[in-house]
Image (cartoon, rainbow, N blue to C red; front, top):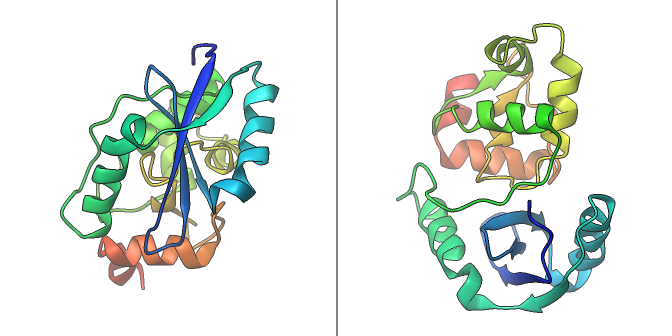
Length: 176
């Protein structure tokens, strides 16, 4: 991610509740579950941790394509996203997140399968840690990662949101 002087945010309604969306000039950098007034302090803290400073400015236009594509997804008319991204994370996290983007709509993979896919078969716990730090839930579909026994485990937004997303994609019926 580039160090920005402005971070553009907007809030949207979704079937899983309010989402706060943050973009830079380069692209989408963060989606957080919840209303902007509640999530902005957390988002600022994450950016500060990564040495990113910038004034938060509410801007629908900068985030309109993200909102449009997310709405299409929630209505069942979009199966993948075509957005410029400006991702914050370590090299390992970015490797995991890239692997998550290869899990197709309506599919699931276990943490172990993701670990094998990135060539780190013993990194199952680290995969979980990277999922937990995913700055772009839904866009980088960490909700598609389940336990090796098929159980729904862990999701930053809560298991109810994970269940809703998997149900929307038709994946829940496949693992039930």
